[in-house]
Length: 244
Image (tube, rainbow, N blue to C red; front, side):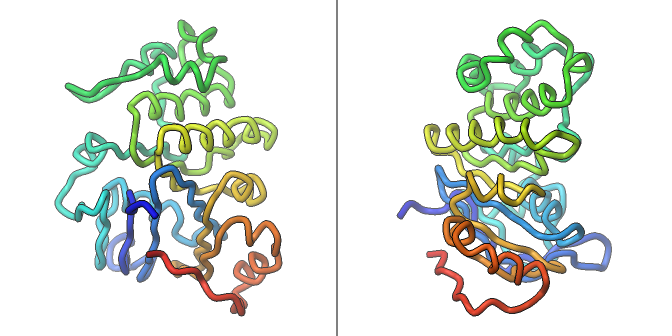
């Protein structure tokens, strides 16, 4: 089994004096999609922001490729190969599709050709400003501009926000293919649970800031009652698999 690209070890974090997530243990390996589920306010977005450095943990350790990232800024983490697609897409309406796919840090190698392979629809739109794209096209671009940076770890926050499920059904399999073919670890927050479980390898469920369930996604697809119990706050009789 490959070494983790990301590991959270007893991580607590929040805003001000209040922790939103508490004592989280989580692992993402190269080429693996891990989905983080839970009701609104459970701490899913905060967890992604901790990984990308936008929120500092109050306790615990965040490791990227085995390295403690506590002293690294968000920019340094991005340069190291962590890409974060936030809620709201994070694109620039005045720039064209092609201009987005050339954006990178100084000295960074950008690979737009590979992106057009995964998102061929963007090739026809390359000269169009992002502000004139549809919502689905904008979300596609948000993912594509991060894939062009060839990340080792991709953080995706609510790709389906404001989109029809049919559009997300076309987007998430592309993320899965990229993850496996490029050996990129993915940590996915997604409100459409069946769509997330279809592409995920492992699943963690957060409730009130605590991990209440950790199972292979295949087991939850076969036993959806386990997921229902976790959302309702009931204890599951299943034993979470080891993360080593």
